[in-house]
Image 1 (cartoon, rainbow, N blue to C red):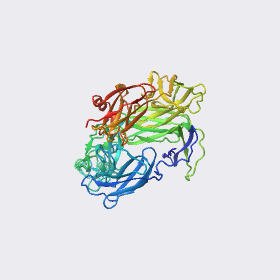
Image 2: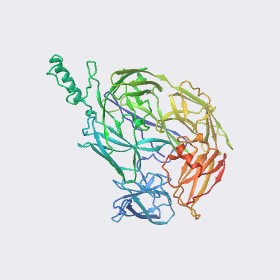
Image 3: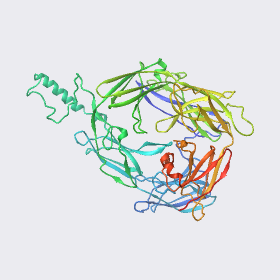
Image 4: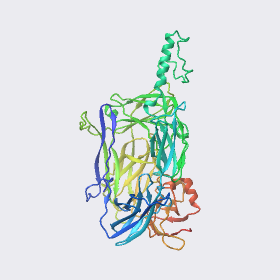
Length: 631
């Protein structure tokens, strides 16, 4: 059973705000105390062993003191070993089972046994061990990481010290292509940065100046020039010529100059994130000359007021995000209103933005473990000035929301009122379509709406219990798109979730103020379909060096995180399986090398149709379909 630890810190005047987790259990009680999922568990002793060698893929030299880790594919248990002077390793006393094997060393990319391209981050091939088996000559190679390097200069071409440069990698996460932080560096006195240990792939390079690198000196000089010019009678030889000094004028027609500074810039030199150019890195490639010039822009201020009762305001977070979508994965800015509901965002570059306020409510997280499901309900608590626990805030305020669009030009202060509104209601009933006895006890059944964020990550959200008559009701649901998850009675699985004529198990549930979602029907089944088979090579021998993709024949189901797009890696004996399949027509194909998550890309799936075989799965069908590769 997993234990989930949730911790979030916010600044709120002189107070610290934390999140505590309360556990609500559904199903039978745990048989063991919770463990820390970040701490790998030691494997039980067995009689099998595995040995081999680790070498550099760049020059073939043995890699001394590399870490070799073997982990179970069915549990979090693992064991590690260090290579000797010749790059050799041996791990003894292993139990029978299926394992993943990987090697790593600082400065190199992690390599997984069976990868087509070591260090690519793509899946490897599990290793099957039997009792008393001694698997030898298992060799791994680890490559040097790639490098992005270049110079950052200011608006007049001078090297800029202390600029943070990030390499954001395009990757597939939760079925959507998004950006994740892959590495960062800080420029030296020459304005040079160097980001090492990068995996092959496409990157966005983002340069963020230090807060004190804003051109305050230029504003101060210009103000002094204006003052001296005024003392000199408004002209003549007593005035300092800023233009002659090569400094651009920053003054506005008002009494105070606008706040001006260097905005974050994306390679090759744009402040608009959605116009950034990707940098492609190959294995162990060093990409030089990725230079960026900072841009001096007027920076605006957004102020506003959250309107609502005091308790709602105290639990409100305001988020500022790019209205033009920008790059998926970039973190939006957040602010906490003060006791009067006032909030401020300073240093905002020109552009169009969305302001969103959310307040109140518990947040529910779900962790499934076999027949058990653990709910983790968070609520906000405050610390007192000494850092100790503050007074109990009592039950949370109901969730509320507000939204507004704002435009920033850097010359004016934008003032916004965000009036909190109550959420919507999602309600309906559960039904059962199966064989044998139909459940009548609904105490274990929960209906959950998981918020789908911009980069596909499902975060905690709302939960509703099912009543004795099979009905459920979830109140105070904020606007947004949700992934529906229903925890069924033991032995049953969710079959469909009919919400206004759409199956919310196949498509996100879009909740908006004008929608009527009072008649949602959740149907459970105990007749799941299952597909099994064996993958063989041209000679008919089992092979495991492939990723098997099963995807819906109908393109309307080619969506992020679709339950009708599934992948697996065969074991070393070539066997594979797909369980709990929705009925329908599918395509089945084996890929020798594929970027994880790329199978959610409709364009990629179109390329697979011709090379794939068709099959149909009906409810409750147990089907065997073997595959043979042609190369």
